Amino acid sequence: HWFFPMRGGSGAFGNMCGACKMDTMIDLDWSSSEATKPFYACLPHERLFFGETDGSSFPNGGLRATHTAAAFTTWDRSSPCFVLDGVLRVPCAFITHLGACIDEKTPLIRSNDALNREGLRLLKNIKLGVEAKAIHSFLGWEQEFFVIKADLYRKRPDLVNCGRTLVGRLPNRHQQGELNYFAPPSESVQLLMNRVRAAMLRLGVPMAVLHNEVACAQHEMSPIYCHSTFSCDNNVLFMEVL
Image (cartoon, helix red, strand yellow):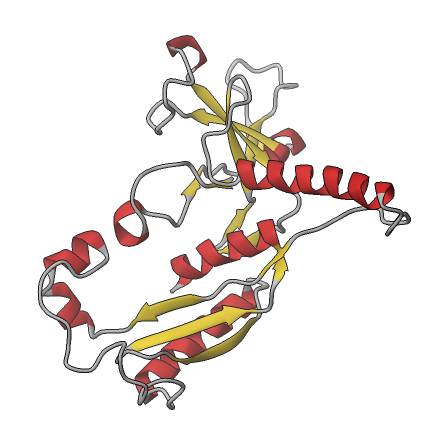
């Protein structure tokens, strides 16, 4: 189960690639008369749709008492599953014992439900789209990033630990120029973006656009827009693949 708990920071520092609870596709044979039950390969459907994990160490704002510290993952079926590094990832919402959300995805799902419910009510009241069955929100994201050599990166504790520069000064030509904007990328960067695009395609995410951005070593990739929950998952997945 792949979920997105609320926690501080972003990028390399905050680990915004989400969280995973990995279960193996095995279970005990409870019908066996042996005291030590044998195990066998299976996929219990209840473990696919629903999971339990310890949520006590995630930020929660005092939402749970000690005896209700468990948290639960539920499959968000508006976002398709995918296989990454031999693991089936099931996008999930993450909620407390009493149903309070402690993740980034549940508010989006609830907002989409409210938009669908109230949007349909509005259309019927104004006599437009009275045949509509549902209202969906779509989202197109883009990721801008900087590419630097690995040996230079390892010499910068701020980049390694925070995912951004904290010391130094701006270069003479940075966001104020335009010579780099949409210029042909270097051979090494083009190879990197081709590899990332191929990896995303294998995961079912078509990266439609890639190009140079304004600053030196600044680049951008973006996919074809899609349903908002699926799109947000793809955005986080892209950061992990990159």
